[in-house]
Length: 125
Image (cartoon, rainbow, N blue to C red; front, side):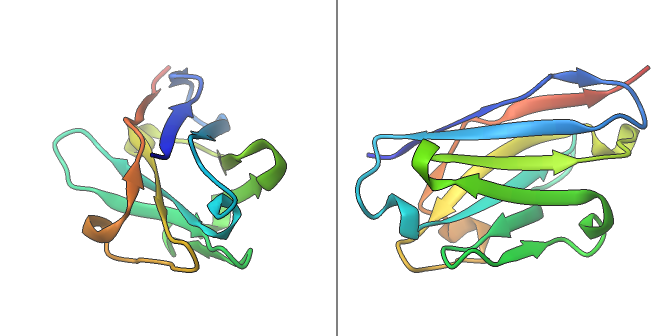
């Protein structure tokens, strides 16, 4: 059973950058063929896509966040990364890592195969 664990700084100041890490454990040889997504949930709001890195290495980024977001992965370390810069209060949210696969990219959040527990990012001075 694959397990995902998000980690990050927790509290950042406006205009700063964050780097979040999703560490994957319990996978198999097929782990490298999974697609990985970053999803966030602001307080009192629903889930929203931040972006994803597909099993073939291509990326999808939310149009509203694309200019300040990047997603990458290190297959050797079983780790997926999210970087976001120029943060503001509206970026305050629980950030989740999720996976679908193998050889799939599911865009419907309810169809994702695995989820992490999430990590809270608070943007405040």
